[in-house]
Length: 194
Image 1: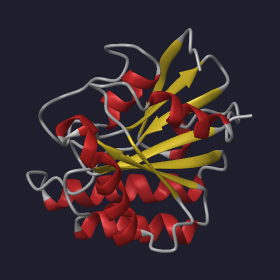
Image 2: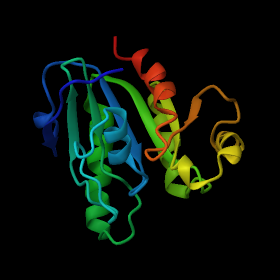
Image 3: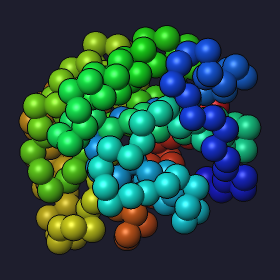
């Protein structure tokens, strides 16, 4: 899908700041440094739309990226960053929870995991939380460029085995470096934004 004019509309910290135009929202969740910002930049073919950082825990607000007035990509703060104070971690957790409970426009949750590692206890908690919301979900096994191409499929399958043995949720590999999986992701996203 070609996005001509993606823009960061608002960085919100409370529901009164969420956009009011009722466009569908595709929401990105995942632990700190799993690559949500790079995922956004790769999808829309921009280098610096979403600010990336090698330092985890940089995103502390909910960032709403307007995609040609068709839908929003919503980047939630990453969780599980150990250097954040307990108080800050709690605040970030509250932002995430409040948004997931209060936004009426969530069309799809995109949950990013690191393809190289088993899901952490925080990942499992987030997965259970998403599962209980009954919202549609797509799981992205990110950083696929960090392992051999021949191992990608089995790594994705093993993540699915751990989190979703029923296999009723789609798991896809992704790599901001290789860009070879982008079309597969768009094919799923398109189903939720019309």
